[in-house]
View (cartoon, rainbow, N blue to C red):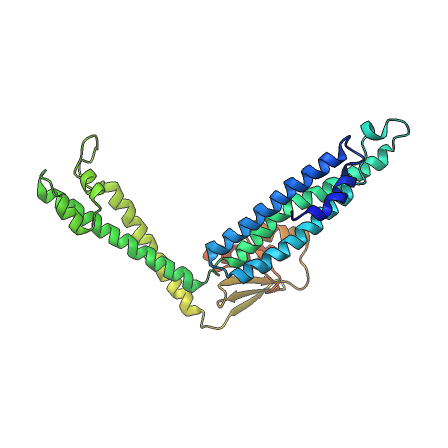
Length: 300
């Protein structure tokens, strides 16, 4: 059992609050061993999902176990200072000391129970492929190609059904690339206001998405070409505004730490602090550019 070493500490953690400290201690060790194992399984699943090597996952799991035990121990240690009037008795009960101990225990408990979720989220962020202009462009191109193929397929299917004039055309639809179940369904116009085939709104909506994706591809192609350019930089009210094309970010670089109200304004406008870049930044878009200028001009 992964947490068996904490049996004595778990016992002491309940001596001041339970009539059955040994039973409560055993239950804690059992329950939190199961919790630890559950999170280790979640780490294994993340590794499989993102194709991470077994060696790397095992290293992360070792780090997780070490920290889990450390935080579990800290919580039990704080809990061992807690006392209950039911156990200690009402005579000269140290109310203020008990309240202080309870507050400390609650803080340790909250941290211990929230920490695993934050750890797993951080691990998954590290596993996710880095989003770049090129990766976005490739995804947009593929999406556009899929949508264009679908539009051609819907048009072709509707033309086949019209030409058949009510006769069975399942074989022709399958040959065109329609799956059999859908081919049969498309020929059944019963209860459909538009009759047989793909509905007009399906073609209209898909065509609108094609137009949007074509615009998106053009924008990303421009961004990709700009990555070879030198960064542009302006200074507004003493703050450097940098167009960092290499990482596709507008960056605001202050002299020192900006005031709290400025940091709050930056956050409201989706600018995030990057310790690596030592700048407040967000992706380069027209909205980002307008927001940056408003913030900086308002500083005057």
